[in-house]
Length: 411
Image (tube, rainbow, N blue to C red; front, side, top):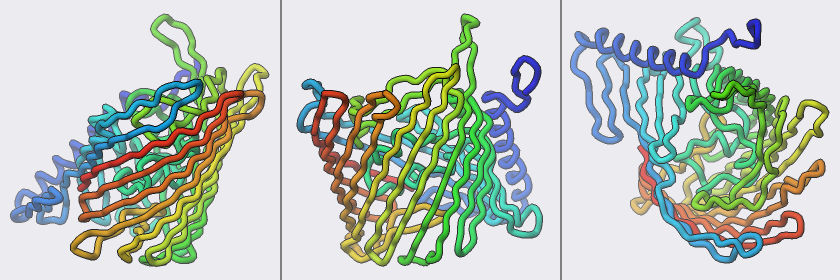
């Protein structure tokens, strides 16, 4: 820290400038370097240009449209309204030289936010030996199995209760990932807000996983992760210092509602937030089990009481048509359909969260979700979820249900 509390590392605007400059520089270098190497090759789907020297420029996207029908009511008869809308409209560009680097930038036009915007470097190309992969930019923090799964690869339509409440999502910083046959290590230090200028502060995080089995259709992944976040105070336009605060809450595993059955309320004067997680994944042929336990502890200033809360989920999957869920880089991926009519998957998930702690009646909730996925091709997918909730908060209780459908195109 500099005198007066000013930071010595880049601000959010400077991070955007750095990433933009890196992207433009890489494009300029390869446009000139490949000009006399011969003709580029074009691929119509997925859209991609492969230059003669091996550099690729590709367009990617993930479009999801949802519909939800609710039965039952919220607390004290509050209405849960049916709805249909776009869930995601993600479009991105990736510039890649295999074995050397890749730079990607994705924007979600539905949420009007940047997703991953980062440059990843292969250390083998830099130093002559493989010491892992380095990334700089905005990316997901290495804590949370379900939270780190790519949005195009999610098995259930929405994250479980504890993932929604406790997962930190994206920040700007530096990340190192190292993978071997039997283990995965991932460490990150995030010294910036996200690219929207929100969530200012510092976070150090790590994720370690033991993978004694890691082959197609035969995976065992046992992991542990932790992160410590130290949010920053801000000075608003009136010159008033706004101290850090946090709020823990979750929707009933349905995004097309603003209703939340569990909510800690706003906790002010936050000094630090400690998150921990345990994760397991087992894949054997068409069968798989996945589970997580997540916990957070909020420590506050001026003698105010700390606040802890936890939750977990277990998810089971069966691919009726015989395929296996994919696994790459410590996360699950969509199965690859074998037949002409695609792959069919049946799923069930139980999740729970407890926000009643340390004198705060945030509520408790547990959900059962039944799901079905139809992977028509590697680029088209239909999903259906039925969620049954059971929630209490103080003297209030509710047990509504929701049926959801999603059509997804990704490339």
